[in-house]
Length: 403
Image 1 (cartoon, rainbow, N blue to C red):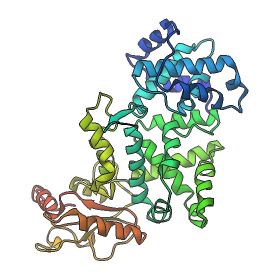
Image 2 (image 1 turned 180 degrees about the vertical axis):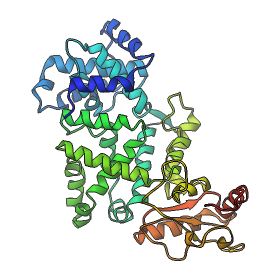
Image 3 (image 1 turned 135 degrees about the horizontal axis):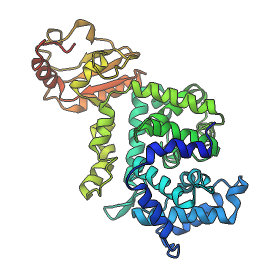
């Protein structure tokens, strides 16, 4: 089990940068007089709600430190306090000891947030309304991944009346699985998460959590009972082995996910640390209204990795097959691709990529993709640019073969 002292040693490699000491000294030299921040009342309420079953967090001094850390972070990063944020602050405060003072706790926490959650807590004003644009898009990214990897789960859960995925996903994302988890296991979760060096890994963790309990979820027929299970019993992380299994499953999901998924995330400026324009935020929040939220779209360049021919890590557990849904099928796909890559009937155990006409609207492709998903076919995608992009790519290769 990872301890506070071990976490301090382990995390130096993740947080050590030119800003770490500067942040520590800023907190050390702060007069701690100005404690005004947006949503201060929510922070005050959270002080008594955060880990209130732990005697350490019931102490007035502990709650004072929590308030200082959260307040200074919000002031320095120009973000509003969000309910549940103290759950992420708490493990960094627990590091405090004689050799690791409070200002170092702040520096580690600030570095963690800026590296992995740079914009998640930032409110944006769009059309006269306050929105947590990054949280809204994060929920959408989770749904795309669930739809791709777990079609039967998608059909059972996400189409329930009055069910909103945000009810379950938001606490997981906002607290990085910390809420309701013992501090020692939170250290382990944070440690494993940071070792992946990928802020987007949280989406694979969320998907792994759902898939690991898929059978239990699918066995519940009563909607009310299902809501209770998802909100109160889904995240059962009680032992170190639970954490290890979660990350093993997340690693597996990651290895089976085309790179286009994270390219989509990057294209929305989700992890951009700079100030986003109104146009950027609008694009981020409009993700749910675009084709890209309906199905995973892949690039032609990914076909080699899906076939296991890439020099990068191959998708070992997936085989690529192409489903030709063009209205005009000339020239034939077989003239360009090995026959074993083309299929008439999709197999749910493989990656099925739909090939459309270059000038065909995406409406038909999305409808077919959703129909396959409804029938329980997983790993369904649509090729960006349709047949024309495939043809151009193959012609540019000297061996004239996608292989």
